[in-house]
Length: 279
Image 1 (cartoon, rainbow, N blue to C red):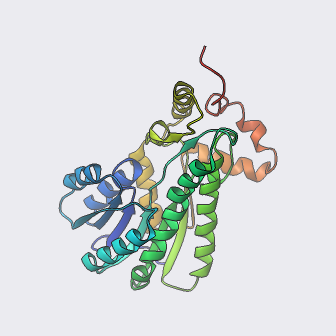
Image 2: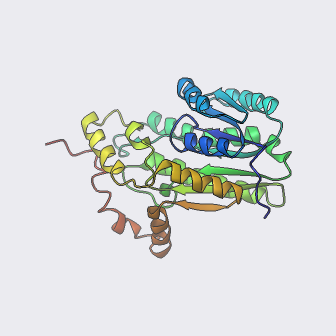
Image 3: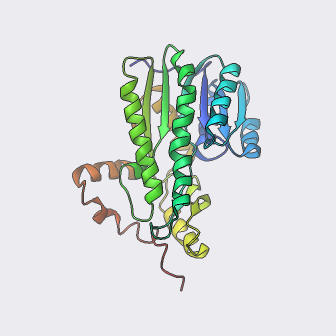
């Protein structure tokens, strides 16, 4: 498959105001890629855009849960950027809590952000991507799209669905100019778990303890993850593991598809404990 030339063309990035999305934007701008940056946080998005120079950058404040707003934004992006050849979906959030602790509304909120926001922006931009001689879509899934831990049902559920969406869409687009890949990050120090949501039924101090335990397991710098995601996009890879933990879990679930939790339970014990009161 022909490699993607990102310089001089436009890459659209969701969740671009912070974390991996912001680092991907910085990396691509330095390489001469034009950018359309999306996020719901306008102030943070403008701060990232202000860092970038030497290339065309537009910012678009949008709630990816709002389909009408997403499609209107896609039209806006298309008017400003005639040569779009890449979409990288970084927008997402986390949710702590067991099924007993979570409400249906809380779980639906996370699914709307992580899954339906990804589907909506992809569908809205696909006509523009089809116009490019070669284009690629990189969806950020998660290591929890490979293995589902206790205490993360809505997050794992939404990310497994992103994985399924990516794979099915890749198969639909076989033989076209558009390729699709899923990225499986693990242990990236983005702060998503510390700034994510938790079930209202959980004591905030208990939730903070669990989030901090999870964050302590993260070792990959966002800039390093961003570099791997950019490389995966350029090479139009179908499947990319980011972080040593992702590669290990990928092997583990292949070797023990119904028993991997026996291995994962111990290391994640504190990170999934949202019920034990603080001493």
